[in-house]
Length: 249
Image (tube, rainbow, N blue to C red):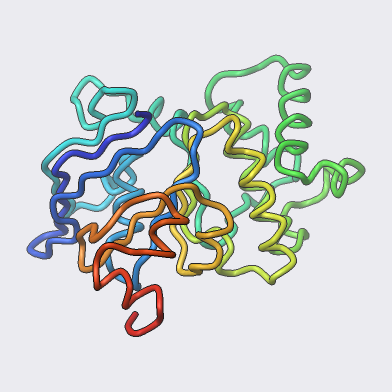
């Protein structure tokens, strides 16, 4: 397994957000996390690359393993962890720089100085993010001038430029129109051949379209996990059935 969570708990101060999360995520698969707002989905994926560390009241116990090694081990280099486990946020967050420098940014901060190498990786990353043909003649333009869907694909290009192994996506289409959403979903299908993807989504149709496995979160717990087609057609838990049929949430 690429990622394994074992009895993982998270609290912020007195409030427990995640309770005994156990999940296994296979290499080069797309895994959807569904559930109502506030049920712990985003907190969980932010635990995988330790983004919750930035919150002063964050506390945890249990383990999250990446290739069998606990990401919370004191010997883990967090900067390198976040290089291996990239993240795409709900709202596109390009830097106020050129399109080119947005993608080159991670390479530069990780010490790459060869401009030929940077140029090739920028091109390859934009191609992988299905954005190259739209921006190849305006790489020096500000990224802030791109449409929302283009900005999100640019953020994906920026993420994959540093060669991660895992891409976490926190509702990457929630701010996008249907056409841009379709482009991101098509992109996810292509990227799964090279990356392990974990996507948080409120859109259950999206989960069925893009993922092989789905986990249903409710009140900080995983109620049910399984193959997406099975979970949506014949859920084993009553709460899962009620959620996916729209009876609550």
